[in-house]
Length: 260
Image 1 (tube, rainbow, N blue to C red):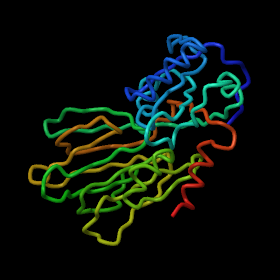
Image 2 (image 1 turned 135 degrees about the horizontal axis):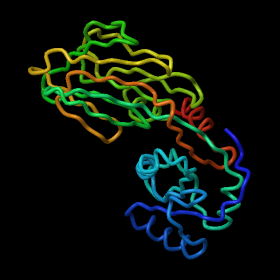
Image 3 (image 1 turned 180 degrees about the vertical axis):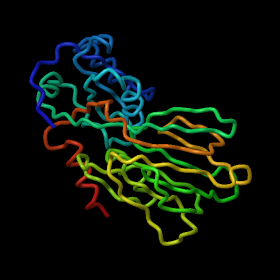
């Protein structure tokens, strides 16, 4: 993390479709203007965590700092909404740089599909039949057969999202780790997943894919009827998120571990 050193004269605003966000967009545009994102010093996203993820995906390769203000229902990735002194808030904000996951999925016809995920790459059973997965790490099989509803690989930023809801571990944002977490594991019943180095390449082979079809999802990009999925961190892609001092992503993830 680092403190932003320059002034933010050119701000691009994006907003979700909810009434609160659209009203905020009109107010802030009138006060600060609204430039195209490609030429902006920062993008301010008005909405909830869903809009933040959409905005991060949209500008995935542009290295534009993104500052969220909560005008939605969930605001884990956003700051409090405030109209006044926005440029000063941006100048004081701290940056967290995160890296997405790269998914390579091969479907039953042999077609290769690619996706990027900020939170997680997930595999899900498509029918009433449980999925059967073989899991390898860096080419070495670690689990010959996992019978389950699915499995996921989560980034530290995504460890408090779906990963947490299926009892996966919360990872500090700067931890060089990925969480590999089963979803409703049946066999082995007591396997709770693994913590892996973020340089690891995780490989899933779908066993009995005709009888037990499986989908792969990178955040919101879904590939149906996959037979093999490979996941690794996309180190060359930097996503820059901005947070008010004292409320950065490190602090939010740490605080989440003490909630009950």
